[in-house]
Length: 183
Image (cartoon, rainbow, N blue to C red; front, top):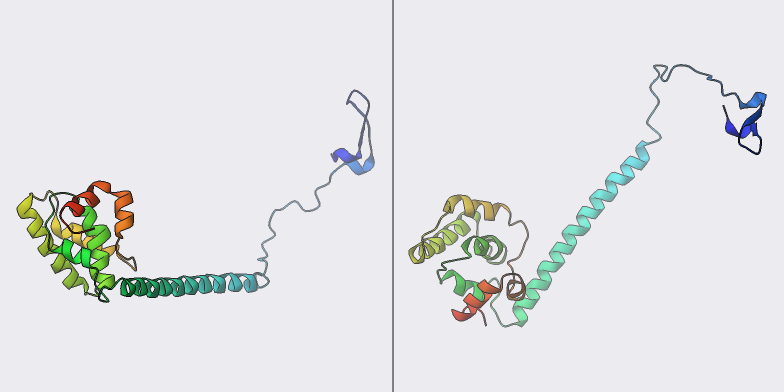
């Protein structure tokens, strides 16, 4: 019943049902076997796909601009291009703690994306650093697995900066400050 075509009294009881109140099923089957055409949907789909491609290109351009900005910042601070002094000092200093964090967020991105080393060279450099760390305090993880894991996730990421390190891992920053690595 179509409730707009039904008349109710003041108490809410049905008093009269008009002829138009009855709803009739015109076609009993849900699907008649005919496949509707999707051609009218394709232009919108193609536009959507192109917007995804354009968005991806915008992200790549932005990443390239951020890299240029980073190179500019490195150059105005008097450091040689493709080196960050405090991370180079860190590579020469074995640590007894925070080694996994250091590999993942500082050394792997630095060696691959700033210094431009190949994966093999970066792996060797981190491995040598971990061997020196092992002589200070025994490592309790698989070196090859941790290095490969860090190198796999590097992508276009830059190493963590001193400011962010100071905010996120104050104990490591303090330790590096005591060693004279950061200032």
